[in-house]
Image (tube, rainbow, N blue to C red; front, side, top):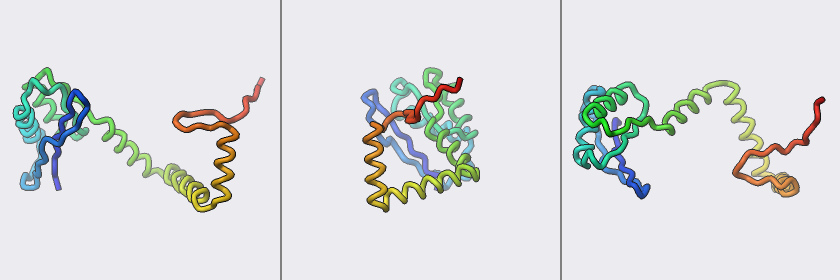
Length: 146
C-alpha cells in the first residue's frame, strides 16, 4: 500500500513519527500531489522550524521537493543515502558473482557456527594474530617484491 511516513528529527537527534498517510485512494502520486502533501506537513509543523526534507530518489519526489523548495527556499532538499545504498545493493545482488560470493560466505559462516572445534580454532587464531573487529587490517606478511 502507498503509505507515506512523515518523520521529524529534532536538534537533540530524537526521531518522531509526525504522521502516516495512506494514499491508496489516490490514483496517481504525481510530484505536484506529493509536493502539496509535503507542504501541508511543513505548514502544520511550521516552516521556520524545518531546515531540510529528506526523501527517496523517485522522479515524482524530486518534483515534489522542487515544489517545496520554490515555496520555502531555506529548506534543503536532501536525498536519503540509505535508500541509495539499498538500491545499489539490490542491483549488486543480481549479479552472479555477488550471488556466488554471498553463498560461499554463508557456507563458511555455517561451517564455523556448527562446528565447535572449527569455531574454537578460529577464535584461537584471531587471538594469536591480535585481530580486533571494527576496522580493516592487513594480516599478511609484508613481502619485498623488488
